[in-house]
Length: 82
Ligand SMILES: [Zn+2]
Image (cartoon, rainbow, N blue to C red; front, side):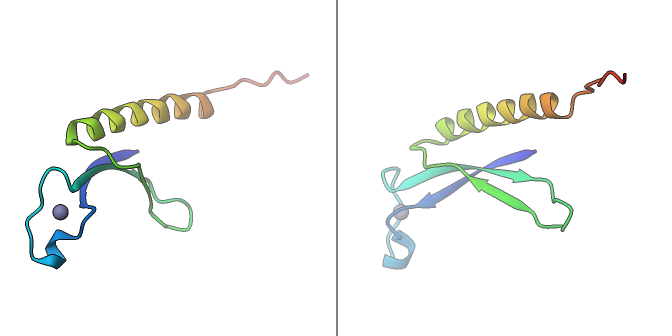
């Protein structure tokens, strides 16, 4: 699982010929999951954050949660055979 930070304008400044200010941009973290069996790559977008820092913190926390989840789900569970 990987992730990156994406920046988006919520006011479409580029279309209006204006420059973006810090007030109209939102930062998102995007989770890139590895392709599944049919080869499709899935991206999961977070909700918007006001600063890049907030998005980075959110991404780090999300990745940690996922890593912990993966450890649990793919752990070697020994089923006793009777
Ligand atoms: Zn803008």
